Image (tube, rainbow, N blue to C red):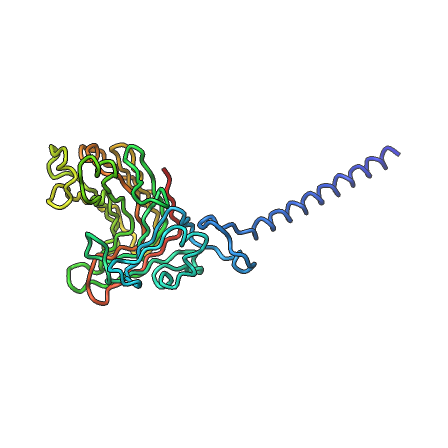
Length: 311
């Protein structure tokens, strides 16, 4: 009898293990088919769309500038976060030719060509501009407050450059841009708030370059620090490495008087100098496709697979 009871007990344990294994398989299968789109603020409603993976870009704090003036107001068209998020950009007909999804590789495509340019620039862009307050572009961040932008992207196509020694036209894919704060505008009596780009990340002939603003004369001080037109600030240029037309990861980390930039898993370049210590501007991140040419027939296409900003 004892032997019979042991056999029954053994069979019960085997049955229980088989039941647990079946439940585990069911759980994994259900989890694998449940796609959550972390790059936007909502999932599409129908079952087919819920299986489609989009680039991981949350538009809640980005506005978009296009290279066109469809509303004929003399400036490039812009779209605010509330128009872009929750997949709203997919329904905006003027946006679709210039920023759209490629679901074949879960990327967000930025296309641009020379047409209408923004104030203080000769070049057109299809570019995102960070808004830490979606309702007020005058609210930005200082280096002391800091921030980090991380993206995975690639240059898909860019036009050949037949008017210089470069093989292709240059494209800026990321920036930290400076802006005069509301407080400084009031106390200094400035009429405008334009500041220079502190960091520009270029794609040049397949190489990634970082241009970082530095003072020509490190003894410059006071109101002269705000001068963006008379050569007060100049670019330090560093080649971070070759990517060609392949996807790459890039990180920009800003903190008090310190900037760190990193391509893929390469050793980061760190800037820590008097110019950063004296930097008088507030800042915002930019990302996308800023084509640096006015040549006829020029164009560029940039793909972003992910883009995140933290402060």
